[in-house]
Length: 561
Image (cartoon, rainbow, N blue to C red; front, side):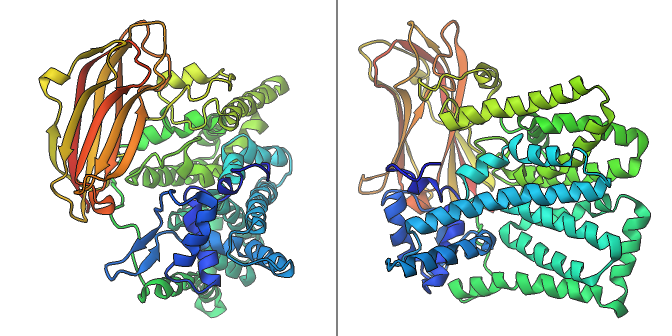
């Protein structure tokens, strides 16, 4: 990361991290409308950057849809930056260069503290320090953790990972001598985990595994539940003390202690995306995190030698991935591995240690580790250099890109996936008439296959989901660059309120020898952007030669639950 050039500032706090960070300047300036905060942020992200995190309640009050845990963990660095600015006589707005720099190094500190504490966890658990440093380092640098901590420091995942390391460490310390102070620490940690990301509560599922035996786990429960020793009361008090920050912050924003800010979003517990969460080119955990594959050896060993450890590990893993796969946006718009599972990758460190213990041949052992680090090194290079900056693969692009190191040709790969909005499909309509399904483009045709759709229902709970399907083939020795599907929305004054140009490829030279299938999806929320009609067409900007067959557009009207 270089703190020079025109764009470094808007690369520090980006994506969902913007919403998490808003709490810091807003609370420190008593800006519960977030108006001053958003104005200050504009000097970093620009006036045209979409703002997705400050919502309006039914009463017209501003509320941050994000949880405040990341802001709480970043508050020491924010306070230090504020003090440095005050000493230097700088104007305060929460977005100074010092605030951004301290935020960045705060993010990295939590990543490296995760290494330190997971090493302690593994050393206590296995009663040996052998391989513990290696595996703890692999947890960060042989996965996507380092990338998120370095380039997406505002996202919650590596903060959760740090808190998981503290949670496991204090569980193991409590197991050693049952001291109440460790339960108080655990209550505080668990409260912070909830404030960072409520699904972090699933960490409780691994408690039987951490105690290693059934008797040890039940003995600890019995000790905690003894009323006269006050351990349960101490734990609950510590947990609630931290947790009460959430209703207080919510009241400060809305005048109510509770507000569900994720309206229109939710879970579908049918399990239909569980297998894709495990093994898919799109975000599959066992595809994008090779330490998971290596850990299978240790799991099989447990299955044969210690059923308790196997069951107490596999059940939490299935539960966690099932819940994560049930979120409506089940791929989490991941750009490097499975974003939603980042913090839970520590689960693999335990069977990975076992794998390294039982492989006697050093050449095999370290050869496998070299492959793991090597693969992640390649994918990391591709992300950082721009070869493939956002990696939600198809089978074709996964294998096409795996040894692609040429960063000099930009935008070779494109991501076209989108998740269907949460809710009930109330109607489905095919839009493309027969005469527009097939078209041949040559050097004289710039625009083609254009359609318009009127959004008649624009109520708050209605969204539209467009699915584009076609087959395509290049008719010359060229590529698909500068050939796009245009998606544009207008309001009742025919002013453009949304415009997006989708590249007509996942790999820019695909479909040269034969026709291939192609699809993209896009969502429209007319209540939010006042759109009344949608236009879409193919724009052959470079006037290349190709053909489009079986072009179809299906629109789904979805009522939000």
